[in-house]
Structures are given as C-alpha cells and as structure tokens.
Length: 190
View 1 (cartoon, one colour):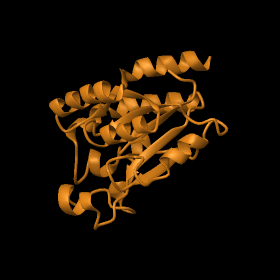
View 2: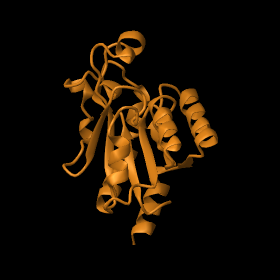
View 3: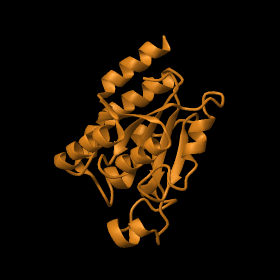
C-alpha cells in the first residue's frame, strides 16, 4: 500500500441506504466504513465523499433509476453514521463515476503537499455500478486501487461478487477487508 493514499466513500446517501433507491444490504457495511473513516482521520489520511447530487433532468434520474439523490434534498445527504467532518472533502457527481466531470482528480493530485495521491481505497455503493465506474476512471488515470470487500455492497450478493471479480481482474484492484486496510494504514503511518 502506498504512503499517499486517500479513502473515497461512494454514495453512502440517505436515498441509497434508507430512501427511494434503498439497498437493503447497505446496512451491513456501515460499521466497517465508520471504522475505516475513523482510522484514516486518526492517521491523517484524506477522506473524500463522492456523492450523487442529481438534477431532476439527469439521464440517470429520468431514464434509468427514477428520482434519487436530487441535489439539495435530504436524500442526497450522507447518512448520519458516516457524516463528513470539517476536514473531509465532498465531491458531487452526476453520473456513476466519481471522476467524470467532477473535481475529484485535481483534488487527489493536490493532496500530500502537491505530490498527489497514488492509491485510492474505495468503499460504498454499489460494487457493480458506481464503485466499478469510479475504479475504471481511477485506473485510466494511473491510480492504484484498493477495494474494501466488506466496505462495498450491491443490491444482490451476485452483483456484489461479480463486481469484486471484475474490479480485481480488469483494473488490478487489490481486494482487502477493512481490517486489513486499517492494519496496513497503521503500519505505514508508524
């Protein structure tokens, strides 16, 4: 694991956890993500929230998933258990990828006194959709990728497992448990 890492929490929003586009399985990863975020903060590792913030006429809203995570609504807010701190970063997105037409890449490159992040650790929703597309764009930009296998989730076990296999095979993502990631963070920061 690279010294210059960032944690990216994807779409842990009210609408995806308890609201209009609820993923029943999301509750399983909340405690793990909470521990990961707390460990990162303790060790001075940047925590970035990559959040859907749709306009009502966005393609995903109108043509695919229906109204969800509309910018400025309660549904587009991060769940209270994972609420960003004042030192965390929040990057809004309007598509599946945290990178597409957002400021995520320039933010990552500006961190660590301008030396930039080398490895992104991905957690959140959904393994086979937004995590997958964010990983793709991270890969295309030369970042190493770690996926917290017990810190990502999907609508079904099959979607989750297929997503993990794809991330590992296609984007060379390292699949680790949250405990393994926290252990590596602690080792690297000692």
